[in-house]
Image (cartoon, rainbow, N blue to C red; front, side, top):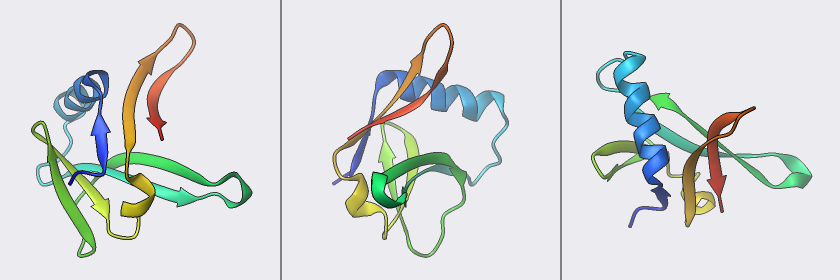
Length: 94
């Protein structure tokens, strides 16, 4: 079971970043959750190497790393990438 899903827009942006930013070989997309006090959980996305407590998932050819401690917070989360006139970025829909 893959806890998160990626929209087509998110997949395109991740693949674009991987090709244009020259992310080193052996790195994968890391999706995580951080506690943020009273407001609940905030989500993060970056590029990293696999750690001992990570699970690795293949989502349509994109390697995704998720720490075992973050797994429960990410179940059912959809990662999207949005572009508006005044902003752009990854959005996490829980």
